[in-house]
Length: 62
Image 1 (cartoon, one colour):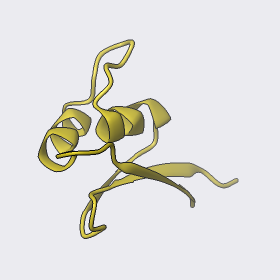
Image 2 (cartoon, helix red, strand yellow):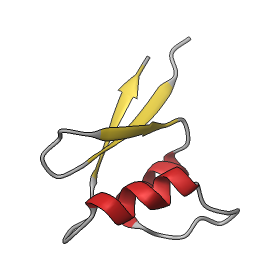
Image 3 (cartoon, one colour):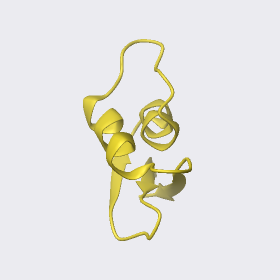
């Protein structure tokens, strides 16, 4: 049984962060607030890397 991981990349694709939850990935990519609280890692990644645009989410099956 495969599982999905959601990677959020910085603009030049030199660094990324991975989440099991698409909701956490969306926070890291767009800065949007979560419904049930936010991942601190997701918020920090967005603050550090989303300078002008939202970031890309890549879905990976493992």
